Image 1 (cartoon, rainbow, N blue to C red):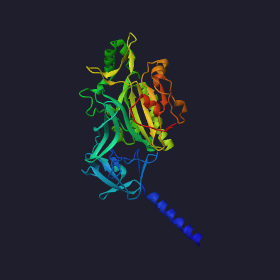
Image 2 (image 1 turned 180 degrees about the vertical axis):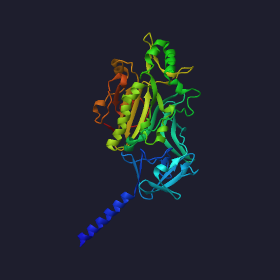
Image 3 (image 1 turned 90 degrees about the horizontal axis):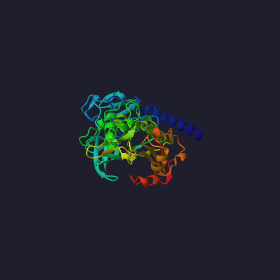
Image 4 (image 1 turned 45 degrees about the vertical axis):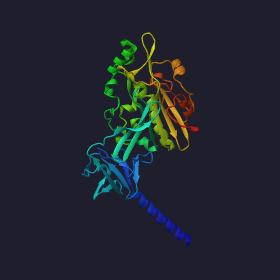
Length: 401
C-alpha cells in the first residue's frame, strides 16, 4: 500500500513539474525582441533582466513579471507610458493592461537614450568616475559600465563591467551607432582626430617629420590607430547595452592590427571562459604608459591625438584586461603591446612589465602571442601587475588559469 502511495505522489510531482516547464515563458535574446527594443528590467530594480545561462534564453515562470522601459513611449502597445510591467502568460505570450502579445511585439517608438554621468567619485591619479547607462526614472539608473577618466590629459585609465555565462550569447548583428563625446573633450572633434589624415598631420607635428608619419600611418591597410574599445561592444548582451559602449571615454588609440587580431582574441575568449566554467567575472580593461615612435634621427616621442597647445588623448603603451572571479578569489591580467614597430628585444626590455605566466593558462586563447604586428601579448598575476600599474586596490589569492 505504501509503495502505491509513493508511486501516486511521484506521478503527481512529475505532472506538476511538466506543467511548470510548459507554463514558463521564454525570450530569445537573438530574434526574440522587437525593434526598437525596450530595456528589460527586473521589476522595481536597477538590474537588467538577462539570461541566467549561456543559451541566450530568458525564462520566466507563469504570471511572473518583467518591466519594460521605452523613453518616449511604446508604439506597440500604443501608449505614452515609459515603464510598463508585462505578465508571462505562456510560451512567448505576455499580457499588459488587457493586451496579450508575443514578446517581440512590445516595441519602443525610438531607442532609449543613454548618458554618461559623473558620480562625484574619484579614482586613480587625477581620474573621475563616470557611469554610462540609462536613467529610467528619477531614482533608477541602469548602469552598463563604469569609467575612470582623466579630464586633464583626456585619457581613460580603465573601465569596469561584469559578465556572466550569458554574455557569450550576446545579440549579434546589432548595428554600431555613431560615436559620442558625452560632454567630455571640450570643443574637440574627437572623431576627426582619429582619422588617418589627421593622425598623419599630428604625428608629423610631434616628430617634426612628415615622411615618418606617412610611414607609420598607412593609407589603406591596418597600420593606423583605431578607436580601441576598452569595454567591448560584444561584452554586453542587449543592443541597448552595446550602444552605450560607443563613447570616446571608452576607447583609446589602438593600432588596428592589434585591435582586430590578438586583442579581439583576448575579448572573445574571456567571454568564453565565463561560459565554459559557468562563472561570473569582474572585468577591468585599461591602458598604461605612452606609445613612443621614432623620428628621422631615431629619437623617441610620446604620441597623442591632440597637440594643439596641450598634449591630450595619449596613445597608450599597453592595453590590459584583468579578470577577477570573486567566488573563488582568483584573477589574471592579460596584456598586449600597442606598437607594431618594435623589435622583440625592445619589447622584452621595456614592455614586459611583470612576470609572464601565459604558459600556465589552461583555457584556450587563440592569440599569436609573440607576433608583434598582431600585438605582442602576455599574462601576469594580479598582484605582480598591480605593483607596476596601481590602478586598483584588488587582492586575489589564486590564479585564474
